[in-house]
Amino acid sequence: MTILASYIRTLIILGVLFIAGCGTQQVVNDTATSITPADSEKALKSTTEGDVLAYRQALTHLNNNKLDDARSLLKDFIDDHPSLAGPWANIGLIFIKEGKLDKATEALDKALKLNPKLAQAHNLRGYIENKKRNFLQAEKFYKAAIEINSSYSIAHYNLALLYDIYLQDIAKAVQHYKIYLKITENKDKKTMDWVQQLSSTLKKS
Figure (cartoon, rainbow, N blue to C red):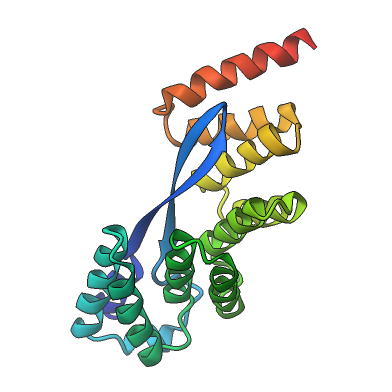
């Protein structure tokens, strides 16, 4: 693999999703991977320096909520590299940020068809099903993300929220909150306090 192909594989985009939980509004930072190991090696090798720069610019636009600019660059990238799943996941993230959940679902399903092992796409699909109140489907997608990447902290957090707020399974919620906290090195103090409260409730019951 070329250095360029290896580099572009590492590109990620940070998107912010809001999910209600723990009595307050929680901010969940999700990462949609640009290109993953399961994607086409041939397509990776065909990337040029211009591709890398354009993709980086798309991610910058997405992070700065310049969604139309990001979408335009990502679509151009997809035209040149149709076998890659990551760009479709980022398109899905754009639609989520716009509140267009049906279009987001279509884009994420395309990503998962190209690469069923894209954990971030499973997590985002879980988020959508959660928003639609299809809680068992959301659980399925979050679990799929974790099965692919057991260290995926955000998927553990989202699953914990699902058990906590919607499915009312406090024991499972505590389990996944604790995994999330361990992975993130206990930096989320609000969640730490909330887990202590939930654990106390479990002991009393």
